[in-house]
Structure formats: structure tokens, C-alpha cells
Length: 69
Image 1 (cartoon, one colour):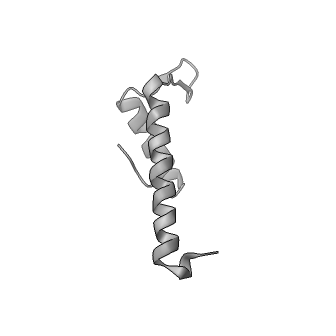
Image 2: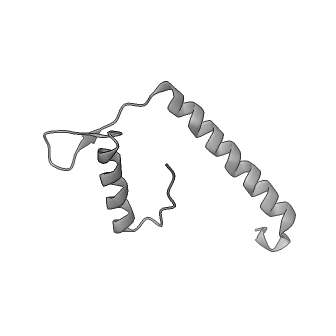
């Protein structure tokens, strides 16, 4: 599942609730604290996401000169 977050408090709360709902995070006894264990495949997925963003950035630079810094 992927979301686009603008970093608002509403977005952050949604992500927190969804992580608990999907069992990605486990609540601790201390209120508001959770723990998360990464699976070995998580790093592979992160690498793919970075690659997709690099490709997207490259295409944007080629297709639209106005997007250049």
C-alpha cells in the first residue's frame, strides 16, 4: 500500500492507525509507542521504490525543461 502524505497531523495519524491495523507496528505498554521489525524483503522493496523515483526524475527532466532547478 502506498500513500502520498503532505506531512499534516491528519496524514501522520492515518499512517499510525493503518500501521497498527495492518500489524506493521506492535503497540507497547507505553502510550503512543510502538515497535516495528523489518522483513528482509523490505529492503528490496525500498530499493525498487528508489529506482522508480530516479527514473521518474530523469523523465521529468527530459520532458519538461521548466522543471529543472
